[in-house]
Length: 249
Image (cartoon, rainbow, N blue to C red; front, top):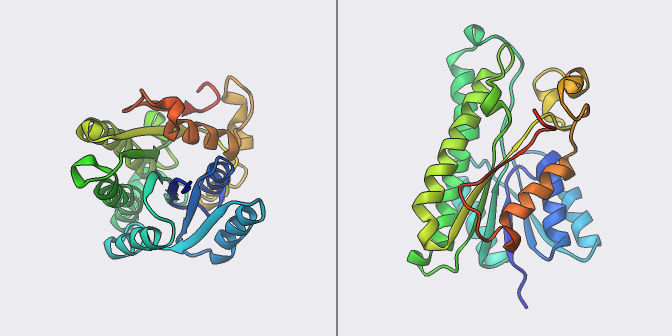
């Protein structure tokens, strides 16, 4: 039996890497997409292969249309028919008040976080939709609890980009539901990942975890479980659905 195929963007670290390993454990052939960290992506692929799984690493800037087309064609040729897309790739820039943010920063955040999800989803639809003779499939968008809190004084641009992902999830889910495609969204909260260091505060989770009802930060593996469930047959009657993995916040 041919393994179902999943593409996970931004899968060289954190939530993306944990998701890649979990999908592989459940029999998926995994494409580990990465932007620049070839060593980290290769490490994820090697871990999957050493456990008997199937995985490839494909470098692509998923906010670039030509790169996205190349990514999906590579998966077509090397792994086969796409079943699941996980739109996980995103950037977080240094903490600051909104009034200090340059147009260059704002544009970069919006393009990297929103356009990437939209471009990849377009390619997935062309392969999954029954209107294109596809077999159906699932798209899981990774948003953030920031889409609900707004991240004042820190990352309003990031929060706004994730709010757009929430809206996009809803609209796309309704548009393609009759074509055999389910679209769901997972919103992580304070999770122990390297992304916080990108924002200038590597220990941010520890500083804020006491504000959470569960009194701790989350693990990438806990978010991966929600992503996997959203794409699995166990969620077969769920689309336009949002799962908050945020410790109760």
